[in-house]
Figure 1 (tube, rainbow, N blue to C red):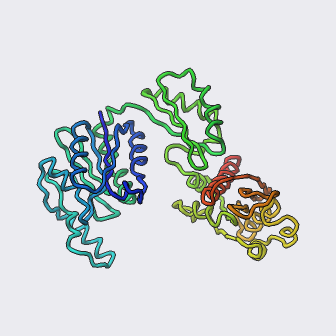
Figure 2: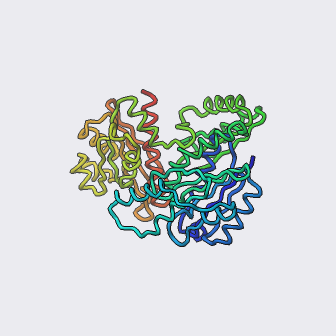
Figure 3: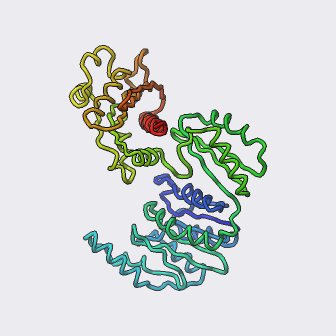
Length: 407
């Protein structure tokens, strides 16, 4: 069985928008044993789109097309597909009512042209869009499944999870060709991960092993046509990497930390300087974080470290703001004032300026305070400012995760 994806939009071809659909859809398909065989991106050009769709239909069993379902003049995906499949477009009153309800809820005036999104090819199954106005569409054409999906990620992802994956599993689950598992690793470099994992899997047959270095972590990917082989590979990888594996699939480190805090009924506070709120932002991006996250302070200046966290003037004068001693007092200060079980702190030099021979750009101290002790770790992270801030937050969150695992 062959699965193809066409992403439409001139904004993708011009580089104004990053194509996140490819990685998301491919990963979701892999989760049910299907591999994406081909992906094409086309601009908002009717003839280019027609040719791309016509070619894909001739090759594929499942064709997914994203974008071009909106109400403007450059949205003509449904028109091109309806024409190629010989389907008449008719107004779906249920979709029209949904569009009208969203407009009323937002309290805005929109032109009548918005209702072009209610036009549906005859025989198509409507995939409801609870995050927008343009519905998705599923069409059965000569034994082939054609899926039209909205372009905005906040609309496409929920629709894909809720409607598309169940349809694919139901129709093609028996034809699933492989078992794909991804392990998320933190605290180890990609080459070190391979050095540890590869020898432990060397004797396994029918296995595809891959590594991907992401920002602040490494993904280990195992693919096999046999579930038993994938099970054995997973067993060995977990035994080899241990606690360095923080999750699987699309898990995020902040989600894992919030879940662990929730399960342990522990609370946390954050004191940040060089990260400017990145750690707190990542934690609070997780649904349910309010149960465990008490508060955070962004204390960029020395004065704020003293006033809000209780860092001593003499400590700052003797050691400077970027020091083990200040990181320790920051963590202990926010934990005491917040009454939390845990507290993390971060103070460093993000650069590209501000470094000295003794304290170079990229130097950072991360503190973790618990009721029993406070640990501070020193790192040198030579990245641009944004990457630096993310890496610091990654190390801070991982410190909390590892402490929770100990308990």
